Length: 235
Image (cartoon, rainbow, N blue to C red; front, top):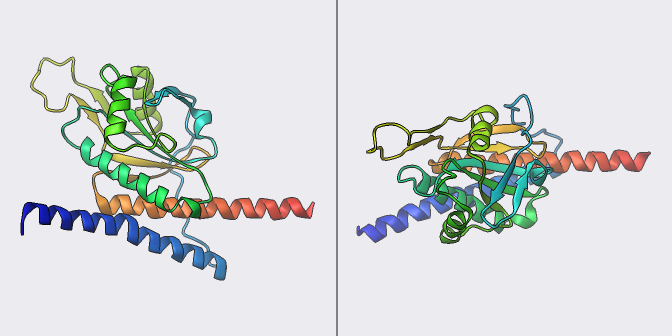
């Protein structure tokens, strides 16, 4: 088989995992919710506090704060545009998530945002991020690539998301292939800003699981809102 054939076969498998399989789970969960009283498997809450106050700048010039995420399900990660290692695969998988969500957007109850933080703000300026976002098909209405104060970016990465981040550019070794240490993890936040899951952003099966857990969170939100509506009508 030619390289193009192998590449096409691989992409077909990825699309199958990221689109068809999660979509089947989507209809399964909604069918279960509407026809039985069986509860959905709830996701654990993995953070003791919700996302703290922050202020970053998105690639489209928009200022992103904690309030920008209020009431939204969020998928977050950390990267840098010149990363030669794991970042291209992470960006590709985040793009597949974006496309999967957009393809099924009418079925979601909750607004969803993707949030990619640079760990190299000295290089990843707004124009650099904007060009990178355009190159990778980022929809700025859903996916924000953000930069900002370096200390603030590393603080939220380490102390809230509980992910590693380290700048090695000040070391004496100038031959480092990747001068910034960061995680390959995608992090799922609920609409209240609490962490509900970690996923390997380089692994298609793990990203597919993220999409399924996103669906579960969305259905839980819909159920909660319906319950509140019923209770308000009884008053």
